Image 1: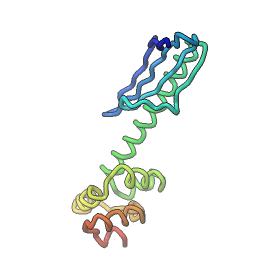
Image 2: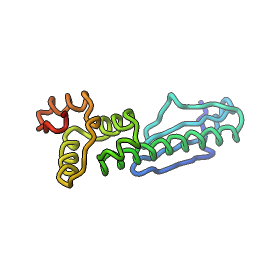
Image 3: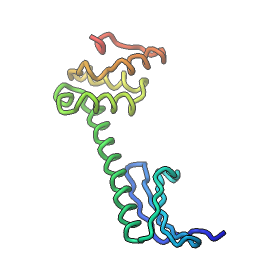
Image 4: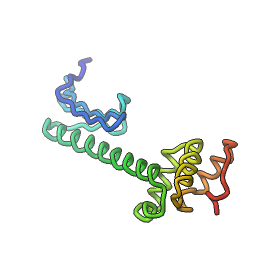
Length: 151
């Protein structure tokens, strides 16, 4: 059985995350296979097959660029939500964006100290930054949950 040979690669580093695509030529079938990786882990559900090398390169480049752009946007949202938890920012971000950033990117054990720090600096914390899932995660973890976060 003949092996595929790598003919081209494309990579983008976003923070600590690496997005990579490799274009391989299958010796037996003569087709090009595009394989996608995130942090060196193969994502087989995203593999792509074509007979055209230019199509394979364009697909690899577009998908890696799309993933990198999404990761950069996620990092910006997290930085904004964590760094400035005040009303003005809350109006700039949708409820979904805030919830996703705070609920998925910040562990419950990190959220309360961040919010307390903001509170001590005299900033107003939007009430909607604590969603029910985050509140439940705090309770489950047995961490202190300030009453001002729910009022």
